[in-house]
Amino acid sequence: MPPPFAARTLLSRALAVPLVLGLSCFLPLVVVSQSGQGPRDAAFLLQFVLTIYCGARLSAMVLAARRKLLQASFWMFCYMAMGVAPLAQAVLGRVPTPVVGPREDLVQAVSLVLLGCFAFDVGALLARYRPPWHRRGHTHGRSAYDGAATGSGAFSDTRPLLIHHRRLILLTLLAFAAGALLIVKLGGLVVFFSSRQEIIASVEEAGLSGDGSQAGQALLRGFGTVLPLIALLVYTRWLVTSRRARRTWSVIATFGALVVLNAIVNNPISNPRYWFLTVMFALLFTVFPVSAAMYRTSLSLGVVVALLVFPFADRFRYDEKNTRQVETTSFLEPLALKDYDQVGMFANTITYAESGPGHSYGYQLAGSLLFAVPRSVWPDKPTDTGVLVGEWMGTVNTNLSSPVWAELWLDFGPVGMTAALAAIGYAAARVDRRLARRAVRRAPPGSLLLIAVPLLAGYSFILIRGPLLQATGRVAIAVLCLMLIATYRRERGAWLG
Image 1 (cartoon, rainbow, N blue to C red):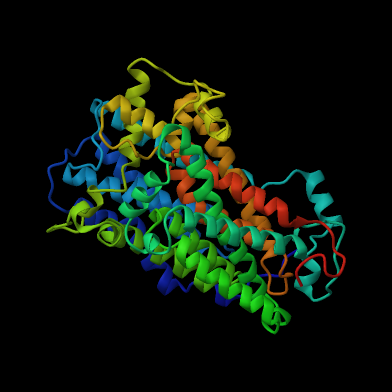
Image 2 (cartoon, rainbow, N blue to C red):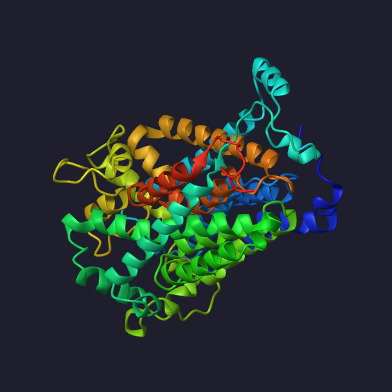
């Protein structure tokens, strides 16, 4: 059993009460007290309940005795994108993307989001209960890191995934090659620090914007950004946890070079904000693998950044002529201008399906899982769900979100959506519990789980926001990279130490 958490890791009651009241009561009440043109109907009331519920669950994640990275990421997204922002839009009567269907479809969408949140919680609750035979097996076969936690240093029969040293060198070389290729292909270093418009123009000049080249563009940008990030995460953890690594000049030099490479290819100017959020979350929880204070601070500040900084970030990422200046007399208005269209797009997805096409019964999901299959081989390969609904709506900009609720509902209906979100909650809770057992101060530097989970926690914002077809490319690349450096061997020199 892992050692008990010290009492100092828990927030005091003096801080816990304001946090719970602030997220679940004060902020929602401040939002609904503002003046606006939105109707105070069933959709509004359901949205208010959803915001309170997500705020309470996020508070529970912040106050938890153990770090729950995956569950906390889910509830942070729900509170920001499915709670406060849509509530502000409901108050103002303004949305970033038009809701084309009747009001009843919006009511149904908010109800299904609330149902999916309940299902996620039920799945996480079920993960606490283990069959008797599984508990007996776990008692007889202790985790490999239990010995590290107790100071014995002995490994048990359980074989955790470790990071292979020599394969890490290969991954690092591939990361530098992929990053250099991306830089050269897009026209040099200056492009990455100009604006998103320059990046888009460089992609078009490189011949990667056509229908036949989109897969190549996704692979180029995916390998050019994911490989450097994973290599940086591994070296970061190695240096943070190993005194020998901090005394080795080659490790320090490689780490410095990876920092420079990531500052180029993964900077917030040339990348989507959600990807930069992934980079920051992954780095933060890799640098501070056991810090409860940093975990709680990150969750709290993440809400502030997402609600107050994200809506104004375009002026730093686009040219002035391509940026709509945000002039507002209310702190709610930026939340209705961009980014947070998830609830509205779920309502549009419901309207789209009920207008004739109906449910796809796994067809859209198959397209996401088989994203690498070219359209020349699969002519009827489905497009992004956000693009599909956007084209049906007739919008000029079809780069729209498609939250996981909409993806699952379109494929499997309300019952399938509820079951799938319960399964996601179950899996997230299981991984969080395993991470809590591994994340001890004397865990080996080469623990693959302590690299993969922070990365997944950060990327979950993109997965939950959707569309899945756009998000699965980088997931597959990350899985390939982690498989490359993974090993079960414990011989000296085979894994990082």
